[in-house]
Image 1 (cartoon, rainbow, N blue to C red):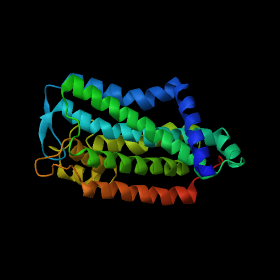
Image 2: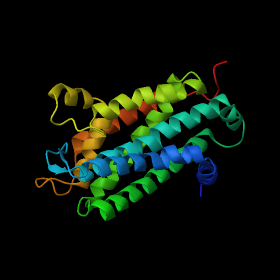
Image 3: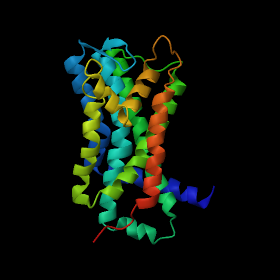
Length: 260
């Protein structure tokens, strides 16, 4: 195995140990989406909502499809942006940069760990929803579902690293990260269905990556009659473009040292 990849794998092991030894990090990354899913489906499971695909479903199914992208964003964007900013302010990134560990191996290890946590979270949410509320799991549309998760993970990990360039210090990290993602979660219909609302809201939300990811996940999780394979290439293209743009921003403005 290439030395850089071998070191990245070792970094993944370290990140995993550090993650589970930090209860607060584990709670907000791993259990917070599950909490939202449980509360929303328990309170509103007998009502119905319209999916972005136009299908009328019970709210247990709707919120399963909408909280899955929230899990991707929490693990791959929120957690990554905050943790990297804190490590930068503590001087950890500066010290890492001064070791023989290649910078790309370090960042790759953190990204792989974030994606692994996201996958575990998705499996648990799908299992819970299927057993508790009889929400279907992907069958024929499974390839589209997995590729959609992969594209979403790539894009939001890249955006998480890019966001650190706009965060001045660790104290500002929670405010900046939440300010960039929470309005989009509501505007995109993650917590509140918006398909019966004004069309301009859906138009504006479609410009940003959260709504296209939600539509792509929904299409692949609960494919409509006219699209049994579940591919939604339009949404995937928007999310991927945001990911590519974030990679360019991160490669230009990512900082290993704090501004002091």
